[in-house]
Amino acid sequence: MVTPVAPEIDSALDHPDPRQAVERVKDVVQRRLLAVYPNAHIVRTDFFNHTYVPDLLMTWASGSRKAERRVYLRASSDPSLLASDVQLFEREQQPLVVPLGQVTSGPSRNRLERVAEEHHTLVLDPSGLGALPAHTATRTATALASDAIVEGGRGIMGERQVEQFLEAVGSGVEAAREGRADPTRFALSEVSRRTVPNVSRRMSTFMAAMWQGSGRSLSEFPASVPLQSALDETSLSLLLSSQEITDEGFWRRIRPLVDVKTLLRTGIMDTPNLQRLMRSAVQAWKGHVCMVAERAEAGPRVGGVWRWVIDHGQLGLLGPDFVAFVASSRKDLDFPEEYSAPLLAEVRERASRFAIPLTSIRMLMTNRSIGYDAPDEDVTHDPQLDGISAALGREEGVVEALALTSTRTALRCSFLSRTASPPGARALVPYAELLGTTLRLFLPLSSEDAEKLAHLLDAGEPTPAEWLQADLFEE
Image (cartoon, rainbow, N blue to C red; front, side):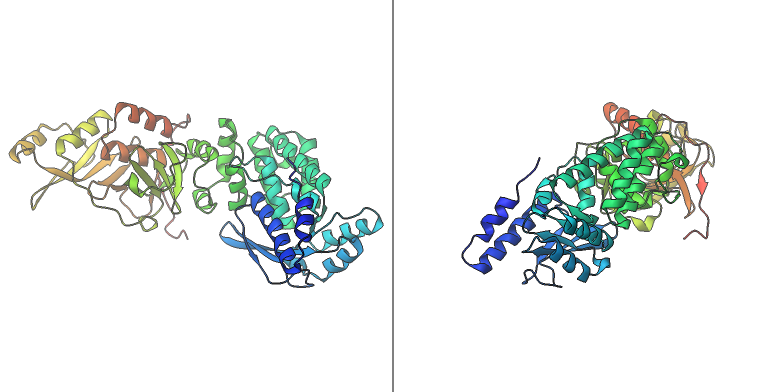
């Protein structure tokens, strides 16, 4: 939907006080840019129509770095004058020029188009600014194309050019996901022509991932893109924030292009596509430690419980009254809270209910610690434990246990800190085993919650039969 900007600018310029007129024009442009791209932070300068100093400075987070774009307002919309101005700007700054009137057609406009493209500058006239769609929570392909214009568009764009670009990219992304070459190729050519190289590469990588997700080989992709083994954080962010993709086969094919370190740098907190990705990744990705915290410590709660979230830079599974964080190292997680130790009967009941073998149990009674273990044997049902419990007045609390996962990987489970990890500082276990064993042993799950957990941890694929010992010299 086009939002008329030109009448607002004309009304602002009609103010009798020139200073007030300038501020009102800046209001119009700033308000519209933020409506389109609310992730940006915009700072005004005290200048207007200055040769070198921008009127507005727009900054935003781009993965782990900070990006910026200088915005220049121009009182004249004469293409010859605009071309002269653009030639004075530094190409690396990728300026955004907003003339306060429509740029006329003709040879001068064509020259301005070439100059703006060469200098990585976007000349966005009022009709083009008004044609950019307002931000919505659902990140469609059209919305991603609009972001690309704001972050790195180049050339001249009025209403027609903006609408054509949005349509081309929207159709191209859908075509890439279906493995159709011609619309994908056209969209890629528009992206290459209309955006600066870094944004063009990002969009191309995103579309290449969609192409691979369709089941087609990257060698058939209708453009020259760097062959890479993984999506970078920006491309992954585009994918996870786009409209929900329900095809489980797509996510199985995408999964090898994604790793958890990149996921944590995307800035994504909770989206439908994050849930889809993790359903595919839960048995393939591996971690070293799981920590279960009460829900008060969890951040995002979008979309209800039993969801994957990224909270304070860590991946976690959000349940009804807890969040279970997984990480590759204990130092990646916050210091755990201390909880009361459950009774031996409770731990034995949970282990028996979910068929979790316990080879070692350490109990605490006032100021005495008692250990009971049998290496490689399940002690859960040993009658001797009944005698120990009776002798202690059935008030013994379990502080630690050594539990075996479904593939017989040992997990040292601390009930006081609600943390679990395999022995060995570098040992890694599939998320499904790490989370499944930990949550079932630490928490009194209802039948309904146990069923939901089982569904979340079942990707519909065979569980890997082996565990992984990371390279000791890994960075």
